[in-house]
Amino acid sequence: MALVGIIMGSTSDWETMRHAAEALDTLGVAYETKVVSAHRTPQRLYDYATTAADRGLKVIIAGAGGAAHLPGMAASMTHLPVLGVPVESKALKGMDSLLSIAQMPGGIPVGTLAIGKPGAINAGLLAAAILATSDDALATRLKAWRTAQTDAVATDPA
Ligand SMILES: Nc1c(C(=O)O)ncn1[C@@H]1O[C@H](COP(=O)(O)O)[C@@H](O)[C@H]1O
Image (cartoon, rainbow, N blue to C red; front, side, top):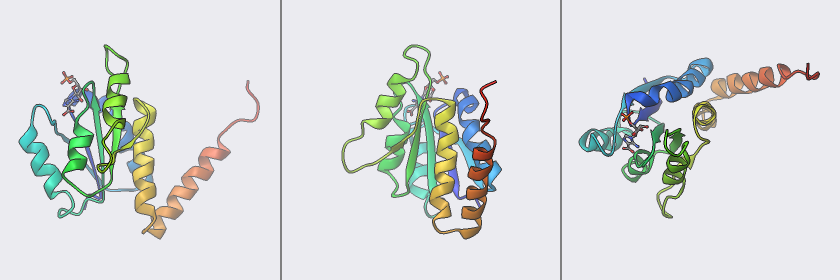
């Protein structure tokens, strides 16, 4: 059963959001993916967000670009933690996405990650870290992954 829902505003976001999925794959966390847009498919978003917790999801990762209202609107309709990934936009290089996601009014939080691929990777890792607080086996896998990452950092620059 999926524990993490990865949603995105458009199929064009998958090239970025697949990195969140890959991080979850690496750590053995079950997830689902769906294109959901606050602008283009508002009813789909409503149905997704209002049923997410009852369907067993624990964390939602929402990626969108430009006027990125998806993460905030998803957060407005569920008490689950929502992690927002600002997808890099052509016109403004993702600054529009970042500010749209980060500048939420008090009361409806969205955990905002970095623009683009690093943000998507970290959203996957952060979702796993949240789940690991109540899953010892996942915590062990996450710690091992972090140790392997540390061990892989070269001492010499060339
Ligand atoms: N920001 C949103 C939302 C939303 O926030 O609901 N829905 C689509 N989009 C964004 O529009 C961009 C361009 O989409 P297209 O490539 O389909 O034209 C995408 O980055 C998507 O996340």
